[in-house]
Amino acid sequence: MATIFTFPCGGCGRRYSVYYPKALLYELSGSGTREMGEAEDAEDARSGAVDAARRRAEGAGNIWVNAADTQAMVCACGKRLDVNIAHHPRVPQSKSAGGGRQTGFVQFPSKTPPSGGGHGPHGSSES
Ligand SMILES: [Zn+2]
Image 1: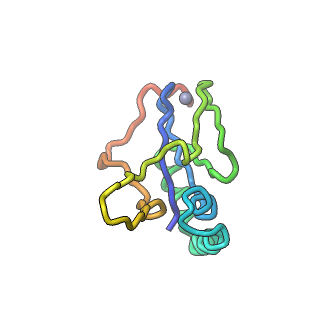
Image 2: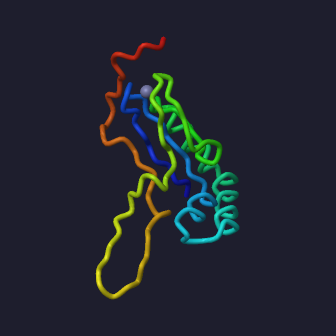
């Protein structure tokens, strides 16, 4: 399953859907090897999961980004966007006793917008 996070630009509100290949995630999180990730990436690409996620993101008006291509982006409004997942630790570090340090890093489902229908960006300056 493809892993995608959405980053809203704090400057203009554009949303960026960033695809994180497993090879990159595994390497960053240490939960697996790059080789493992590459195998899963190939599977995602072959199954069309990445294309489907991309179409969904672009259909929602988001800008598609492959994190493997860029770790430093500048929005069209001039705001710098940090898409380095290592700088956005979303995995709660549970420090419960008993050890078992498991991170669910790659298990996030791709998020769908909570609003059901009725999407209509107002104030967009592009036409
Ligand atoms: Zn912006």
